[in-house]
Image 1 (spheres, one colour):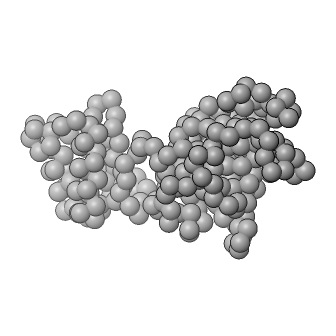
Image 2 (tube, one colour):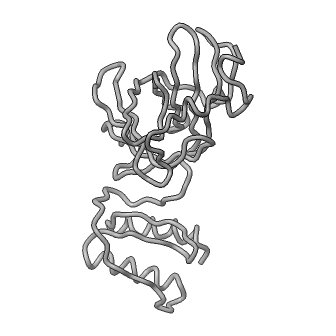
Image 3 (cartoon, rainbow, N blue to C red):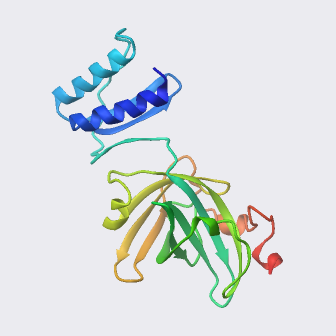
Length: 229
């Protein structure tokens, strides 16, 4: 069975059995992490063996429990992300993630970072239309550039958008400047809720770096905010 289709069917079977974890396509087929009762996990493994033609060629090993609260497919884009840089009286960056057909947005005054030791303040901002993602030039209070853009994957133990509602969301960015795992952690509620934007410690982390200063140009026009203005 084609790997992508097998992932989808594994997802459905796992949820029916109450198994938690994840599945994703790999070089040798489908990779699976399963947590649940011994009977349920064995039933899921039986399904995979039968899907592979009943050959029994299934490598199984015991791994640590990750504590999942859902079963999901990894490696699947959840939509687009954009980081905009805005000038004017109150310069700032804005992180936008596509969630349920709109761009959920956060104002990030100092911009994102690839240094896991640095925590960036992020403040809830009004959601935006997807069609606005690539707009550059003059805006309401100054000028703006598209500092970075790409696709992203939703992660963590809680499904989205519930993860955002609970105040802790993990995601993976595939941008031109920002890559790898990130997390948003809400620290204060209210109409203008405050969050911390944190880079996770992975192969894309760059301790001690300042990606905003090192890579100031737009990914569309290849101009800095000052040059555009």
